[in-house]
Amino acid sequence: MDAPSSPIEISVVIPLHNEAKNVKDLVRGLASQTLTEFRIIIVDTGSVDETADMFEQEWARLSNRGPTSLTIVRTTKAYPGAARNLGISVCDSEWVAFLDAGILPDAFWLQELALCAIQENVDFVWGRCQFKYSGKISESLVATSFGINRLLKAIPASMVRRKTLIEMTGFNSHLRAAEDLEFFRRADQLSPSRQALSKATVCYLESPNQYSTIFRKWAIAARDCSQAGIHLPKFVAITGIYGLMTSLIIIQKIYFALFVMASYYGFRSIYRPFLNGQNLFRRHFLRRIILNLTTVVVTDGATFVGYFWGLVNKVKGRRIDK
Image: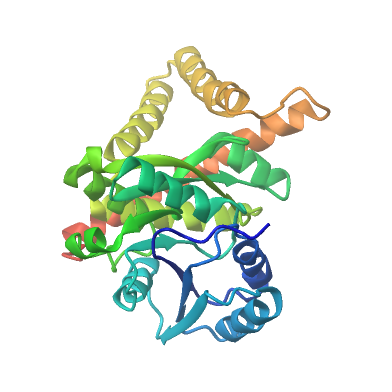
């Protein structure tokens, strides 16, 4: 039986930068879509590993979609928001969907987005992302930060009406990270009633498996959240908890400090991961707890450093446009 054609016009905008290693998975996911008619817009931001050329070759090899067009836009290095804005500027479709490298869309991803857009008559159709892991550290990161097998709302899974994107002037082009959170905030301010959560799902395949990479990613994300005024309560909470533990140690209230420390780390490294779906009671229980504890310390430290970094940038006048 033939795959269904799209009752609405959709362009899929994908910013790429030196992602040759992830091209095959990305193309495989797009080529397997049950919805046949959509346009792909690749925005290559100065890759030096022939990412765009590899995508074009893989798409020609795996796809037999006549109605589907592929457009490649090349630019110098740009942050994800700026790259998406460039892709939006060359779209002529009613709807714009978004993907990133390292993400594998479900075969029904676009079909579910289109179905939700038609049924709900909204401007924002959110898709959901499941975070995969490939090692013990990345499992710990997913368990303590996102949740094993949990589906979380994500921009590189979602679809927005193009006229609404133009109305919002697109994404913040000056944020290296957290531009998705900043976009969600503006969408909520525009109109919560114009949004719908669909059944469309994707998998994120690139959860880092080294603590140095985790620290760098979390610090950069926290810096940009700070400059955009996002997640301030989280920063205040982390600062307050560690400040309390430090103060108790300074005034030699060691037992109180140990109680606060055990409560906080027990919640973050055992209780929350268990609620998030991590099976802690398999073999090597103690090793999983230690890994979770280490991951919490690393992500908390990176969040504090990054948020303070962003505050310093604000004081120096390095402001975010939107």
